[in-house]
Length: 226
Length: 226
DNA sequence: AAATGCATGTAATTGGTTACATGATTTC
DNA sequence: GAAATCATGTAACCAATTACATGCATTT
Image (cartoon, rainbow over all chains, first blue to last red):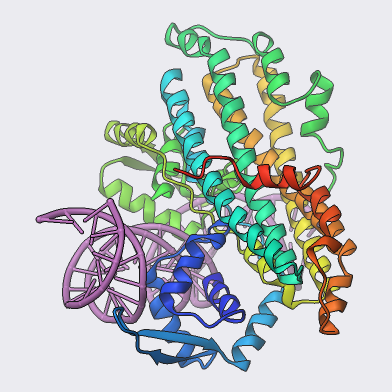
């Protein structure tokens, strides 16, 4: 349902072709969404049928003709209605975390390998983000105008950066933890048991608490009765 | 594609019915996935046809009969293959961030309202998570066994907590920033302009940097040539 | 010569959501 | 008396991905 509004949102700023919309989804908007050309084109046709946007053909030389879309007044109205509507409650789908959740089936070495691999993926994402944002920052400084548009892009970008940085940090800390608990895998292989006491110090450090009380207050927000 | 493995993963730990699987997705696994009963039941039938799981009917009194599923050796094999496979690159879909990205179309007051609303959603999620985790922690302490299974759940849970806490913090900081920049909306209404210089101090604080150099080094990781 | 970019789309398939359908028991 | 819990499913629909299809210009 959100793709529609992402497209209307873009077209509320500039006229664009499907191809250009896709590029925007691949750069800045990759912070919060991703889609395919084969989804964009039918969606554009649909929005045009609903009269939320309209199009005109632009002939080009040396390049294929393009179909430039503009938002209509009805389109703007529908966009604003969505912006004012109650935000959807988050429904996260993080397939890597799902994988990690079941990685006790792997050897410690393999777990670390997967974590390092994924850390790199996130680092690449962060690098790409920073590149996009550095370019935007140069443009903003040149124009020397600070608008609400720039403000709202900036806060979203901040979230994007944070998200990547935090995930990378988690990967690093988790790799360290698994390394320091590698013996757990051997203990289990020999049908032995490790007690909770054996690992409390490592756990406290990982959860960034001082002691049992810290862990308790981290898990227990003190308002169970709701 | 991941739902399949989430279900196989669960069934690799305990036998379960569709209804029980759903409950697990609604509690701990809500950190990284969500689904519906109407997706789980057909998926179970499909997995049984593929011989990755099998089922037996359990009659109950006072409650409807239930269909208990177990994983097969082939199912385990396919699960392990997935665990060893290269993690998918993240494809985030965050409809609230998309909304926020276009909120320059709203008044500052409305932006703040939406941010506060969403902050509360995230706070509720965090509270729920903490509750689940506190209960798990009690169980772990009682059992006094620390296994690789508990380790991998713990690291995933850490990520879940972090994610919520960071998002809430971002909401708070962004509300503050928008409040302190409310004048931008009035400036634009009067067709005026605010210069970048007018807001640099606020931006530095928001991006947690000291000065232009800090901002630059935050955006520019120094490795553009890749 | 091969790959990438520009530019548009369709078709087939899979994945996910909402609505519908049933029915007993327990809790508020 | 109403709502929630337990328990299973189907049907319809919408969203998203992968594969297919074309073709010229530019870059490697």
